Image (cartoon, rainbow, N blue to C red; front, side, top):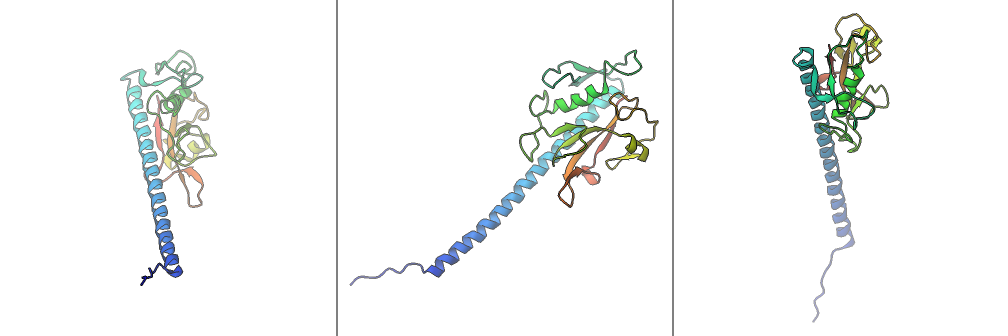
Length: 213
């Protein structure tokens, strides 16, 4: 006498498939949250590294501990060909040309450039390709970017820039690279409540003010 083997019914199979679908959905959401969190941690860690790097270099230059930067090269036409250390010694001109302020700011950017950086190559964790450190960006931000930028005349008048208090000094040609007040911000690009990429202005992610003598 043959014994019939009983299989799963259609209803049972559908229940199993449904359970697998639910578990897979939960797993995907959890994994996505984990990767987003990891990207954010890396991006913020890089932001803090750039701020510490700039602060160290400025401490040495502003206090005349050294006139030539040990880490920053003066920017020429591109990062790859910028190999001469930035020299902060004053020249005899009305404006500092041999040690142009723009060469200093771009030198910081080049140090961290993802393609031709001569220091730490920081790629934006949110796309894994572009350079995370950018310069003088005022629009078309992308989440995770670290923006090195000049303080504008309007921000100086308002005595605040990117959520940071701007010291009360006489503004002169603040929108140019060689203004007599050579100060700048390093800011972090985050997402606002509407999902727009903007400069963070509060909390630990707000920008930091810097000054080069």
